[in-house]
Image (cartoon, rainbow, N blue to C red):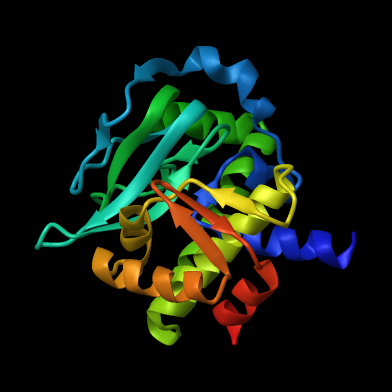
Length: 239
C-alpha cells in the first residue's frame, strides 16, 4: 500500500462520514447483509424523518441499504452538533443491541432512504452463527470510536480554524478516494452544516471561511465549498 493510500484511509476513518467507502478502507463489504435482509423490517423513510429521539432505546439497529442518516446531539438551548453521517451499507444504532441505556442523540434521515430494522434478538442470533456479521459490527464500532476520539481531540486542542480545515481535509481524502482529483475538489456543505459539525456559531464559520478564501485555499458559493489548495489546507489543519 502506498503512503498516499495509507493517508487516505487514515483520514477517511476520522471523517464524519461512514459508508461503503469507509468500510472498504478496512476490508469490509456490506454485501454480507444481503442474505439476511429478509429477517429485517424494511422501511422507506423520507428526508427529515426522525428514526430515534434522545432518551429512546429502540432495542435493535438499522442497516442502511440506501440513503443517509445523521446522528445529532442537541443542547438545552437547541444548538445542534452533528456527530456522524451514516450512508449506504452502514449500520446505525448498533449500540442499542448491546446495552439497555437510553440514547443521548437523535437520528434524522438526510435523504430518501431504504432502511432495514433488526431487533436485538435477531442481531444476537446472527452474531452467534455468522462471524462475518460479528466482525462487521465490531469493526464498525471500532471505526466510530476512532471518529469520536478525533472529534474530542478537535474540541480539546484545536481552534475553530483548525477544526474547519481538518473536517474539509477529511472530506477531500474521502472524495479523492471516491474518484475526484485532488485539485479543485468540491464538497457539498453549507456554513450551517459546518457549524453543526464543529459545534460553533454560523457567523464564526463564515468569518473563518472568508479568511481561507482570501488566502486562496478554498472558494465557496451557495451550498458548495471548492478546495483550491489541499496542501495548504492540510498545513492549516495540523500545524
